[in-house]
Image (cartoon, rainbow, N blue to C red; front, top):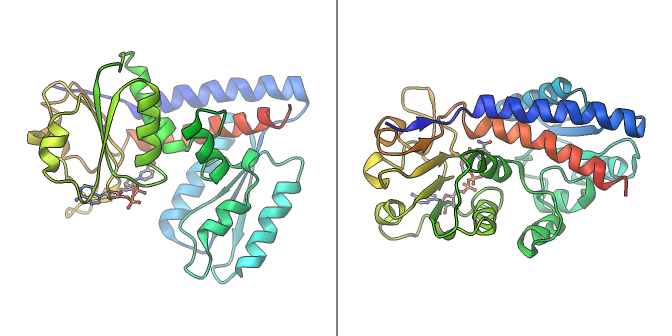
Length: 283
Ligand code: NAD
């Protein structure tokens, strides 16, 4: 039987680390880190994510500001708000909740955020930093995935890691972070032939696709570590991952549940990134 990784407990430990760090920074610098979160429009899922992010910031004791902007805001007006936050000495981190309404170019928005305040790690300067091995802000979900894997205390050298999904925000950065831990990494995606065989060769399997229960137990090597990034609404109306937990759990050595696995870690790592931005700006 696989052991279930408690992402909630691990995220709580990370948030408690951040809480202690916020107190230390307040004492050392006379102010707390401040995260600004911009939400455009009323996408219900985005509202929930932003609410959770602001609540996590409050838990850690850091400052946060929520800017709620109307769905019909012009692109230039949004860019101006971002530039104002870039110039604001009391704002350390800026997060623009995606997706944005279709009349706004997301790439332009991401590019407009000052790289040293880019808590999501999506700015090209941070992406380049990740791939070149320079100091950078690492995107929150990938950072959460490897924090979970690191918590198991295993040496990944010589292990085969398979990442299913090649998005800029999850799949690609997760692959680079596993490469940094000396795993031999394969990235599988929608055009991969025989996904089952590729997954079955993985000692560490990270799935970030967005298709409910795509990966089933027969696609998993006995004893593999399985990290499920997916968040889907199953046919039964309940939240589920990209991995079919019921058939995968008996085969894996460790597995993350959905909900309660990677999701809470994403928010905890956002708090960590806000601290990193604060510290980066003190130099
Ligand atoms: P995306 O749509 O940008 O990318 C999906 C990737 O899956 C693509 O690279 C595609 O090639 C691959 N893919 C699609 N169908 C496939 C198939 N049949 N076989 C193999 N590969 C296939 O998605 P994303 O933004 O990377 O998110 C992936 C999932 O992770 C979604 O469910 C999303 O909600 C979830 N997510 C969770 C968190 C979190 O905090 N837990 C954060 C971000 C994303």
